[in-house]
Image (tube, rainbow, N blue to C red; front, side, top):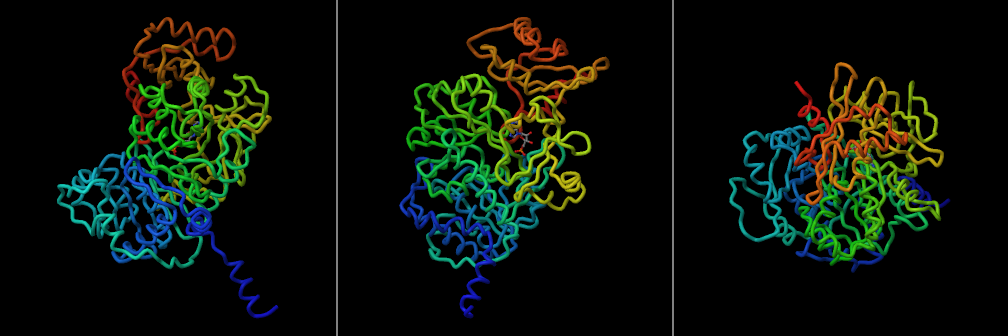
Length: 546
Ligand code: AMP
């Protein structure tokens, strides 16, 4: 072997899995492909690459260096996408701040992550004004804004984002470094106690991107993510990198649409105008879209939507399918980067009920995900579609632990598997189905009742628009179920009628007899977490009789 060949071989084996490498092919393949921000901005992948370089130059001039932490407080925007790349590509850590947390919790996360710089949308300046005297680590701020007007604030900025980019060179030589370098960090959306930080390396994000590409790109038909798709996220970019899909969409080189702050009319407008074909969201957001007056007239017959973050209710699935939407479930959590499973329909000639059943399952594990549904002693339960256990996982992209929190990290990784805290069954076709969170399962007289199943059954009544079922402590039964129900505006129903509806399922043996203890309470609103999920912990506190 000549010296040159040896050198090349050494270089080949040392190729690190870095986020910058996700950008190589798409920019060359189709440099004119578009990135769109609301009705306000549209530019090509070639310009995107230049803007990433400009941002890297602007950040470096400000003093950002490898190992620093750069935080972003923004709605879903082209700017955020640029930060997804430029910040980690500099060897710095991107902290995606959950702007829906309280100002005190935000302060805690800024402090805990030791943020050095913050890029902040003008809308969130009041939050920073409230806590600014107590932010110790931040050296400077960059202003993000859609308009031109100087905001009223006492904070001073290194500059405005677009102006900084305009003044920076459009080339940057991103150097190689260790693929295990931390790329991102963000905080779980826990509702009590302090938020916990999770973190992911370049290697993990690249492998997660390839894993999702393999899982989403290979189905023969239903739910396939491919090069003719148009992508728009509807789960926030601050929460688990919008499920990692902006990385996947960029690696695919497809048109991407960023909707800013989620407003149902803007989302429906962009879905139609930009001909979006793939999105992901939690059921609450889809519910908002479905309840909007423009929903009926918006053509969504080419839209694929991956539902996660909470179980997809069967009634929602049916309504979406009737509208021509290709709807299906995925599953993951903050700690898992996040995607672990996807519920693609692979069987043909299924009737509607069978299709709905599969689309509403939690899904099959993605390539490289080792998923166990474990009972006692971490042993796998029988895959009979009924026995339940906790989902335990291993995969190359799971957080190694909670940031600066050894005790909780050890609990998370007890026995060498990441403990999800989700209870599920598994069937012979390898579809997993979450039946509850460990903490949300209702134990009536020793029997385990799935709150999710009960919610699904309540939703089959035409008068019900939203429901949450919780267990309340009870001296005699241990726990008793309470359903908090929001009625549809135009249909009335009494508690008795709704209980009769549930009684039908008990009589048919679909749900346990213990459910006769169910109580119904009609409410105007159901409390949600900062990412739009039903906040059962808070509901239990609120509705538990004293
Ligand atoms: P988070 O870390 O806030 O994203 O929440 C993750 C949790 O959401 C998981 O542990 C599950 O309890 C729940 N979750 C996510 N996807 C699904 C799904 N498809 N079905 C049921 N629960 C889900």
